[in-house]
Length: 467
Image (cartoon, rainbow, N blue to C red; front, side, top):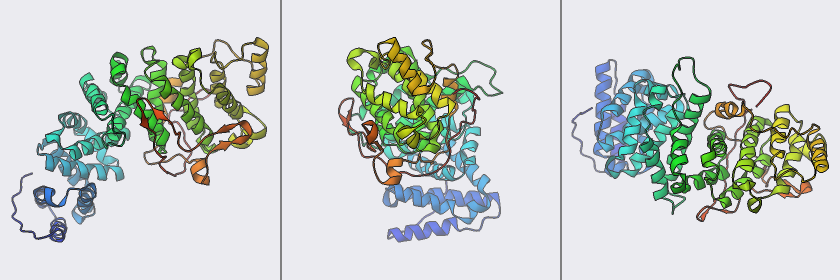
């Protein structure tokens, strides 16, 4: 997309005025559209170092084109040309402008990401992210964001998943390790999110194969690398707990829970986390289970599916690592209570919640030591007998894999929405909006991110009778 035009600018206002004139050109043919796009890219890349240094300036530049008549009139053609540019360009400045446009357009119009996938954009992004163009950190972060957004709104093709090598996953984990001393480094968040969304893609491919998938599912490279080398990539684990503690966006909570589920049900990663991190995670899960509103039953079910292997398989099962036993039992009792404070807080008890709570209370170190007390606990908590052989449901992994929510939807919080912490004083449980602990090697957990949003969560692949 080379286009030579000479400009002489004296100040930033002239830059924006000239850019407005470029995108306002009357384009009635593909040739004229191409000329406008070349002029846009040539002008913006030539003055990028001077006037487009901030994320806000890059976004403003992208929206100049997004809001232009040429784009509104010829959306598909302009998108395709920008995608072709991303596939072909090698200059960092040009790639940055192209990636920014596709990111902001795709967040408003998902068909942009679908077009990128159809045109081979996934494999190109893998290459660009790993290449880390010219050490340009702003570009690298933009490419990571684009890879994440593209991967979370659609099911990736098997031919794309097979392109992910172990080395790519290792590279991302090494990036996180290299920044372990700074929890607020801007790289942490986008790199973590890419790993989380790739794990989800592997899960869906393995447990919900599409009608056109005729060969075996692609091995989960995220879990594979953590199984083989998890001990040297602990910072990733510390940070996903940090993010879960802060995050209010439902889709990102689900991505984290899906990875936790696999880590806690894969024997090689049972003890991937430090014990102190598991204690923090228990606190976060107690807080979130209490804090979720009545409309978030599906998300609550997912938390319970993760809670069982967390308590049963990790080092929490060891006597010296037991943590918050009484608080856990109180929360589980409240969730299945048909009267009193539990009924007031959680409302009616659905059958799926009963099954999942039943599974959790059967964790050996949660159960009472004497058989009579055990049976009384079962009757009091659930109104049913305990099956001593119960464990992970055969359908749980499918339910965890398939549970999704639209990007941008935030889970309502009793604490945030009511301007107070989620608390159950009558049961002796008190939780705050953020767990004020330290994770792993001393990275502090920060303040909660405010968020709001409504919407009932439903699995698009709901299995009747179990979850």
